[in-house]
Image 1: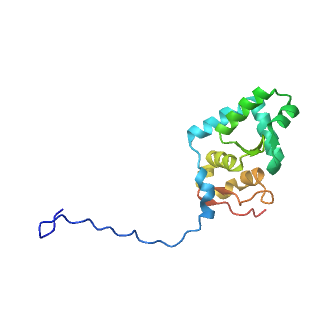
Image 2 (image 1 turned 135 degrees about the horizontal axis):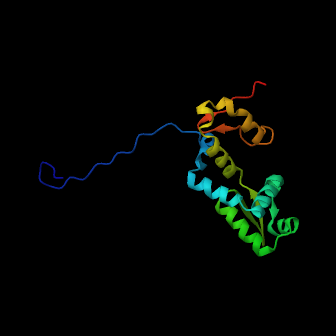
Image 3 (image 1 turned 90 degrees about the horizontal axis):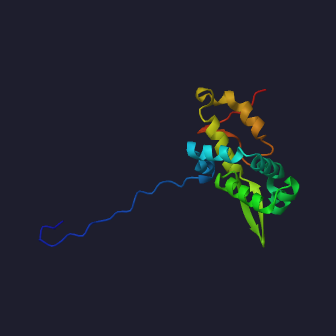
Length: 161
């Protein structure tokens, strides 16, 4: 673009308008919204008996988790088989791991599990989420969870029972 005097005109840039600060902590849960492909991967991972046993063992262990070797001993599974099954569950986002020196500790990925449950119940009861409260409550008692249960973009009201 040329100015009136024939010289090229420099484009003018303006800063985008500043928006008020947003507290993102209330939106973290929604960062893991699951689609049908991820849901079928999760169900495929859980459809094998050893992987389902590993998943349930990690759910039971909670924040303590388990080392791979511990799980192998508890479940009577060889190390190479355990490693393969753990990798499948990791890819399905149902478990997570943390390195501890030379060892790796595995945990149930509560965020991934919540995303799977949310996927299943997203349109529960035609959007009347209060009808689904007992399902959510049975899945995650408020005393044991780090967050209050939510379903899709709606908060689940406390039970009136």
